[in-house]
Length: 162
Ligand code: PNS
Image (cartoon, rainbow, N blue to C red):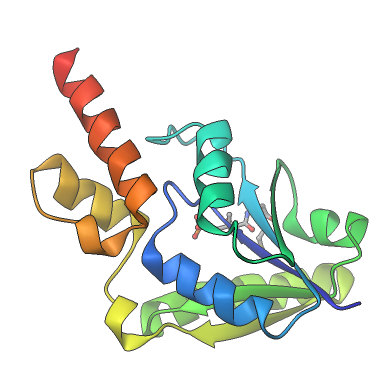
């Protein structure tokens, strides 16, 4: 069976990510969404919270599961017998950044990276921009799965109350 890994920070998952997961799930036998742990970066959500939000978001996709990893992505792919890394691309900036990583990863173990072009309706979405807009009171409800929007509002309210 063909196994693909979709790695990222997913802090938190957006509708743009979700669209890519659905499209990848239609092409591969199994898809693993892997929350990459970056200990030098303090997220808005813990890794456990991000996993929970992702799991709720992909509950209707039977061939998709969620995991986390600290270390080299290629090692994760090797240990899980994944033959493909799949990333969404919003534009040229993403491509410049992603191409270098794809080439590095292929040089390391031979694993190939496949790119899925973002649906134009999600081309401007990123977790960091959504968090910034929401922090300053902007409306982001249509950009996130409903339960993620609820979790984000709750987290912002907790922060404001501190
Ligand atoms: O959502 P992000 O933050 O753009 O994802 C980037 C990520 C986490 C996929 C990338 O930084 C990564 O693969 N990190 C894992 C460590 C690693 O393998 N680094 C070498 C990449 S060539």
